[in-house]
Length: 559
Ligand code: ADP
Ligand code: MG
Ligand code: ZN
Image (cartoon, rainbow, N blue to C red; front, side, top):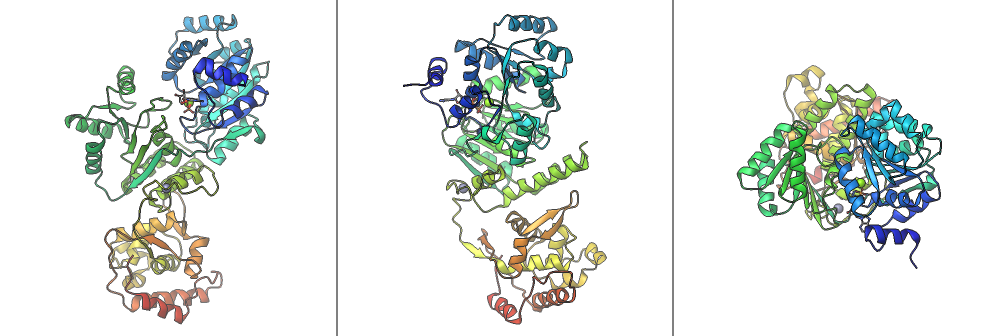
């Protein structure tokens, strides 16, 4: 026996069964509860409001920021025999007034509304005179200032709900919400814990990888040589890059399109349509492209630069493989990406608190690039899942390089940080560790420390990367905004105490430290002495002489 909802699913949409989460959400809404649904991209969120809309007696409002797609969505509903329309800035005042009259006459089950409309007081007033049963909020993370895509007009939803006398049921839907954002959405819209449904964020058909130390232009061309017949998106961070890359691809005979906010609307629509129809194979775009794009056969999403945070990254990468077939998400990392993003944050109009939060998100993005653990598990943890399993497919899971014990090197770095008073950033710490003679070191009084040069067989960049690795593994914490300060974390202290080992995948070319001299021992001894003398510092670094000898036995070491 099929339930009423299943029958509607079959009759109107032609699907046999619900996907995970859909029925729970639909039932909760129809029972009259304010509800939240968190489902990955392509999980099937639209059905969650479209089926209740068929059952409720009054109108269903769908608030969505995707103005350019409203017409397509409405057309698709018409094809399924469902009466729907939209209200957004593409309509003239007369057209909008006409639609309101039609709505009043009960001509539409579903009405898509752009959030900007809600800023018009007279419009809110007009809506309040309609028989509205249900308000669905798509991309509900836009309501939260902690989200990556906050839109002030979304806050007007509260006012809308207060204006409508019939107390409509509310459904908030999103694919990207960190625990903080989810809480914010639910608090704003009065959604109880019992009516929050999450099918998790995992996308089992996506394979993530991060490419570091690659020449990106070369990597891209090599990749496209193998995959040029597949539909894919390349995200670049600036309009100039988009123009340049798409031109270059076109020159090599790839059917490449481009999309960014600097192009006029007509051209953007043309390019988007060509991509949807597969006339364009590879779309090169800024992050302006893709929100709500329902193109099922995108086989890869390649980020030419590191995005500003994990939410943006997962949302963009998640546009691959909506049809459930295997697809790739590749991120090309380069340190200058982070400098640029940091610059953008710094130059922005945001409050200090906002900037601080954005910088922290950027740091987590960087940790994603430097982790050696499962990339998918990293993403799931970021979105609040506890103890996610390793995916077994991502670049890191597939990385079978041997692991090396780098505990000693980690101790060198961490104790050097402590010796320097935990007041500095990565650059100067790596300079001291590699025995640099830059003036700054002298100015800060670390000349002597630097002469030990305990990691001087390495370049400062190499050591800086190792520091990034230790940060990604949470042994180092970053505080401060514009001038990040590195501190040893609690787990880092365990490393210093010898209670915890640090393992790292073998580097592609193993190099060994050759010039080990008394410097290392001198430095470790100094550290121990100083800590013993300064009672304010917890005595977490106690290198016994035996431990020092033990370290000596292990040298020369590779890092
Ligand atoms: P989301 O908004 O969560 O990203 P959509 O609502 O756009 O996802 O749905 C993604 C795709 O999955 C659409 O093509 C939709 O028709 C399809 N779909 C949704 N529900 C089902 C279902 N129960 N069975 C099969 N396909 C479904
Ligand atoms: Mg959607
Ligand atoms: Zn993995």
